[in-house]
Image (cartoon, rainbow, N blue to C red; front, side, top):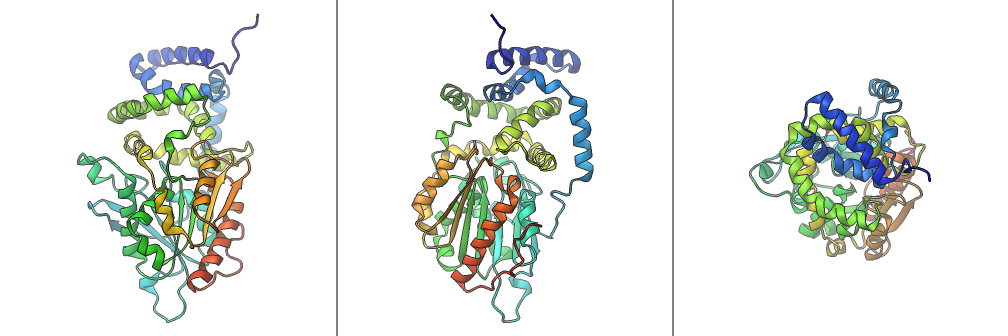
Length: 403
């Protein structure tokens, strides 16, 4: 009889345990600490069919490739005019203005162009919109911002004072950004993942803004509710187990920041496979893009990961979608998105008669990085419809072409 398969979860976890023991001897970090921090990621990888022992093969080659990509890749290099906006609790939100001049800078009486506000997802930052920024900065006003505790924004003051994080608070942050840097003129709101949820919270809190100023909405790789039904591509039993242990595990990790960050570096090869699995769907994604996504995810401190993880179970904004009805709307998601599966996009589209539903074949959660040309094409079409809807200045015809 043949031995256990390379992709057998039990065998993989056995190998992971041996790897933890070796790491304990090499680093001096306690075995309990290493197991507690690493086994969740390893188990998820094993359940996804990842052969843990293969991760060590060619490690030096992968590290050299990463160094070369870090030195040469332009992703995330685009910058705009920096601003800081204070949220309701005083948290300083980092904002960049890009593209055409914004309302407070333009008073020539001509029709105002669209102001496009990009809202990024969980554990990312505004640089996740790199391709969209490059495509549209010559024809629209762009507002890009880092959500609280993410990117260059300040760590949430209210959370540090003991108040739990929440999507509703993020909706208030978005309103503060709009009021500060785009107080007049037609708006298009583009949100990915948690950024889409942020926009739904804004719609719930300020439906009048959508009636009076919002010209278009793009909901990319996001959902309106029922987060607890997401299985992450795991078997039913594995998904239930993850649901049971994840909240406690996140709290524990959030209290052991220094130890976790140290072991994250030790486990870079494991986390790279994990990130790849849950970020992209196709096998032929540009390695530079994969590395770029890995850098953004790695840059998010583990206590920020723990801070926001609980908010998704509480997110339920299906009724708030009513504020979007009649507004040009794009609902776009990848067919291999394991974090916000396409069924959730279909549910939102059903709630929004007239919305354009786009299911991107074989794309994963970071679809705007994986299939930027296609995403830009659909955004350009949305911006055109939005400009006509609110009587805004149209985008130049070349805007939205591959950059």
